[in-house]
Image 1 (cartoon, one colour):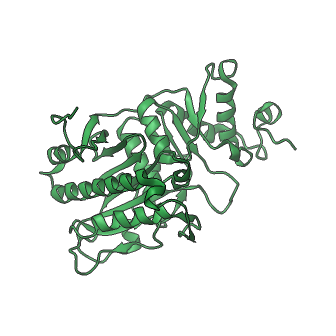
Image 2 (cartoon, rainbow, N blue to C red):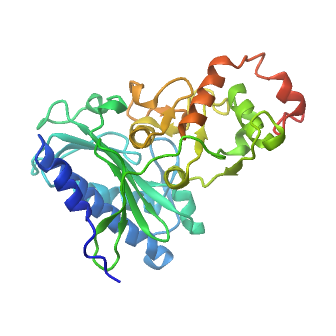
Image 3 (tube, rainbow, N blue to C red):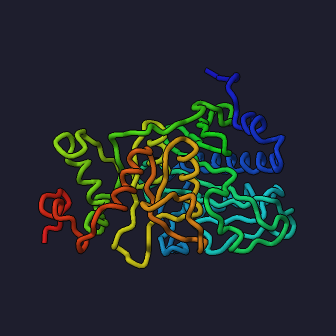
Length: 356
């Protein structure tokens, strides 16, 4: 059945921002991003039939082995957005440096940052993956971009969103007026509004963390997870479920749909790296969406949106989701004593204690 009376993404954007300063260019940019996501969705759906699965011999700037679809998706984002005259430059997980708009194209007033294919390690096992993006104002519109142009705190974002490629393709987007959920109509080829004004429940009984890293966690994180695992008989007095998809976009989407909290905290697995996820094109956009929907996103010590970037590919610890749980984890970071890296209560009784 065709739902021709639904609001499309284009209609929503025109109503919300078309008549504001910079609005027409922002509408055009976001529709181009949506077009890129449609193409990626189709490419992901083809899987092995399209010859796009598997790994390459190359690595990205973070030293991570690239999947074929990482590179393909990056090219799709670039090709769909570079020519329209609304961006001054692009930056992504797969590019070492910012991508300047070619001389034959007009340079615009916005900057686009993106992770073209989050969770690409899931492709070969047919688990949901996604794309995530952030839009900033260019400090020097029309001029050649420099790395420092992108180093803006998350609160300066003018739009952020993600697309998730699962049983259906969905886009979750905010232009600063709440969070809207769209579903791709495969017949008409339009994203249509299906979940207006998404909100994140304040409380939850679900958390997501990679428990295989438990031996590297800081004491506040160990304390939090131990209390959740203790269930009704523990200090929380209720049972929790634990989830882990290995795709931040998929984790975020689950939290938008039913609440929860996601943790990829600082740990001592790789001491020189303060976190796993990238600030500018992963943590900042998801934080923008979470706060717009009544949730919260934190480093464990304060809002992600207040972090002042110092590097293009800067990593940060990231905790986001239901407000009550994020605030509890922040409180534990503030008030849990280190005591040499162990908390006696959980060292002797904990589910994730050091066997040695």
